[in-house]
Image 1 (cartoon, rainbow, N blue to C red):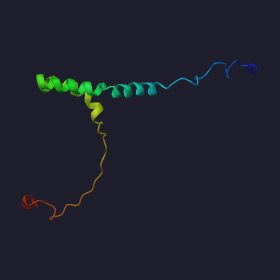
Image 2: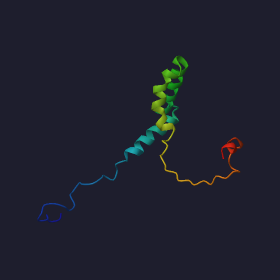
Image 3: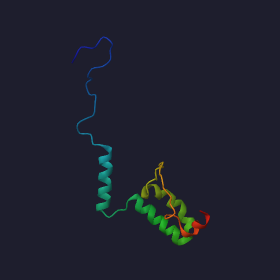
Amino acid sequence: MEAKKPSGRGGARPGAGRKPTTRNVRETAADVILKRRAEGGKEPMQVMLEAMDEAYAQGGALAAFPLAKECAPYMHPKLASAEVKAEAVITARTLPASVHEFV
């Protein structure tokens, strides 16, 4: 073992760091999903969509709306706002016929 530094900080410590056999949490979650899919199990989004369809069939759009609202972020990406700069040249040829009386 190394000698301690005068400040008492820094340097390698025995037993510190990630253990070589530790698995990543995301890998474990992916394994669970793959296992459920192989066994014919349903994923959470499938359950939510089926519940929404059932609510729609029984109570109409008003009953299904809360479930649809929960599913929407996973199904449709948010639209980003963008600033558009455009220039247009308007000539008599590009105007509709009904506008010619005002020109």
